[in-house]
Image (cartoon, rainbow, N blue to C red):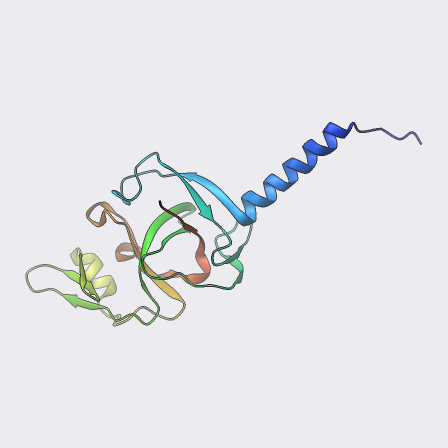
Length: 168
């Protein structure tokens, strides 16, 4: 049987590609912001870097963590999958954070000293929950008047948060 000799540069190229794939799947990724829901913090078309090791190890091509070692804190910008798309939102409340609702003059959600507007549908979805459930977070876009977020689709399981965004 005849051996095929692979040139040194090919070995280096293949090794580099393998390392790049590992970095993209498990350590960090670069994304482009699509939409205005995180303005003014993140602009439509802006490139951002995701720290995929911030909360654990994500399952490649999956929507959750294989192994978790950290939890998101309030005010962190996180990445998760929703309906097969990567979504970037701000974590505004973590598990056991009290939630207050009002339907007096308009529907609102109050978290600590901050109020967020709700539609009647969003109010009816959330009103029965007095605090953020265990192992979940509440995420809202910074441009909350133009954001589809936890007010619409509910709490995000902690194991579904795939990374954290660092903003300068």
